Length: 143
Image (cartoon, rainbow, N blue to C red; front, side):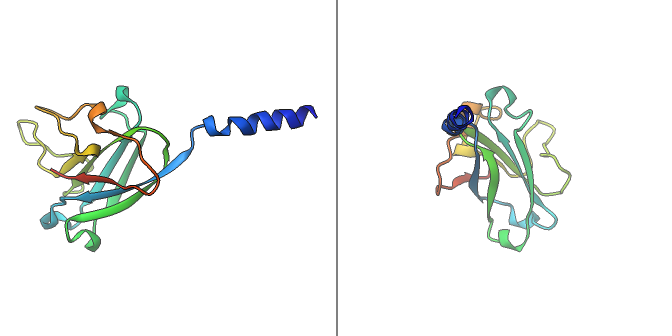
């Protein structure tokens, strides 16, 4: 009886535990002239304090013929449920980083969830936050 009560109590708490979520990310604005060997680099953040410094999840997706139209769709699996912000860029030269010109302006296509844009720099975490809903894609247009 005591074990049964404990099991019922733990089962009742399950909805409060962080669950994994799948998010469909639809990207447009890829530089189709630089797809050869390119990758889409995706970083998912769940906290403002780690925004653009330490992602919860970092993913790399090879870009091929399916991105020839400048669009690419991918499912991000097992993300924490709840609000999150996504930063992504097309790594056109496959060096693993977002290349910038001498003034610090990106020279590879980049974007953020909510199509957030900062002024004189990247957007704030709060501008890029989305709360994914089952069956609804997160759409990002690269700059």
